[in-house]
Each structure stands twice: as structure tokens, then as C-alpha cells.
Amino acid sequence: MQTGTTAAGSGFTSRVITVPDGDILEDRIVTTSGSYSASAPVSPSAPWIMQMVTFKGASGGGGGTVTPTAPSNLTGTAPSSTQINLSWGAATESGGTIAQYVIERCGGAGCSNFAQVAVTATQTTYTDDFVSAGITYSYRVRAVDSSSVSGPYSNTATVATPPGPPTAPTNLVATAAGSAQINLTWARQPRTAAPSVNTASSAARARTAAATHRSRPQPA
Image (cartoon, rainbow, N blue to C red):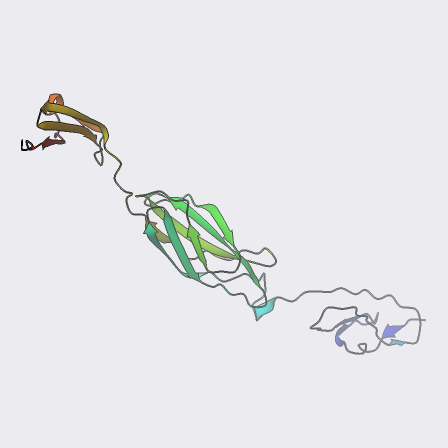
């Protein structure tokens, strides 16, 4: 005697009932996690085998993997030669939770070899204290959700740190030129060339940095 299903079980929607076997395909949409069972009426009554599977629907109605949006309006400022401050607009995710931001950086004008330098929680600012004076740095940021899914990168922000303070002169030498005069010479640090020692013997090759101090005779 052949048996077959005649309708969907309670709470389920019938999608297919095959002919002549009477097999059924039914489904049910739920909104909370939990334990569920499935049933379907059989005629005439007899043992029946049923298989049940669960699918997780994609959020946002677009299908596929849900990812965070890109952080917006990444900007940077250099308040000193050893610090760069970054800020950006928060990323969002429909049906998900932003867990952290990954900050990447590269150094030099026109650079493209970005490397991760920091991971923040959900704050949308970052201070980079590991920079050098007079260098151009580029940054980009991406969000990561609680399922470790990464979103697209933000725009790239490029910031140049200001030059550092001048280096100290070296090789300061004081020479007494008489009872009322002292001559000073020292080596200066040029901006682009190696330091040159400015003394009387090298005056023909370099600018001389010198100072003369004359003492007034003290009244008797």
C-alpha cells in the first residue's frame, strides 16, 4: 500500500508535493534561535522518513555575505614632528555589529606598500606616535565586524610631519686673540649636505661661523 503526504505541517508552507510519490517540500521562516520540529500529514497512516535542514538568511535583502561599509572622510593632522592624529566617520553594517577598525600606513610620497600599524575598538580616532620629522605618511582604515568580516577601505589620507628642530652646532672652539678678545668657531649642520667645519682655514671653502668677544678695560 502506497502512502503520501497531503499537506504541509502546522506552521509550515508547502512548496512541492511530488506525484505519484507524494513527497513534500515545506518551509518555515523563524526570527529567533531555538529548537524546532517539522511534521506533515500522511495518508493512509504509515511510517515516513523526513529530513530537516536550516538556512541562515542574508541580512539587508541583497543576498550574499554582509560586510561593513567603508569608513568615511578619513583625515589626518600633524600637530608636531612626532605625532599624527587621525579621525574618520563610523562604518555601519545592516544586521551586523562593527567590532574594530584596522589602521594601515605607508611612508614616503606616493607610497603604496601599506602595512597594519594599529587596531582600535569602536572609537573613530587614532594617534600615531611612531612617526619621524619631515616625512610624508599615507593612511587608510577598514572596519571589521563581530564575525571577522572585513569591509572596504576608506579614502586615503596623506599627512606630512613638519621638520624637526635644528641640530646642535658641534665642535665649538674658543680662542683668545688677546687680552680683550675671544674668537669662537663651530661646525654648523646644513640642511641637505654633510656638516662642514667652519674655521679660518676652511673659510675659502665654506661660510665661516664665528663670533668675537672684546672686553672693555676696567677702570683703575
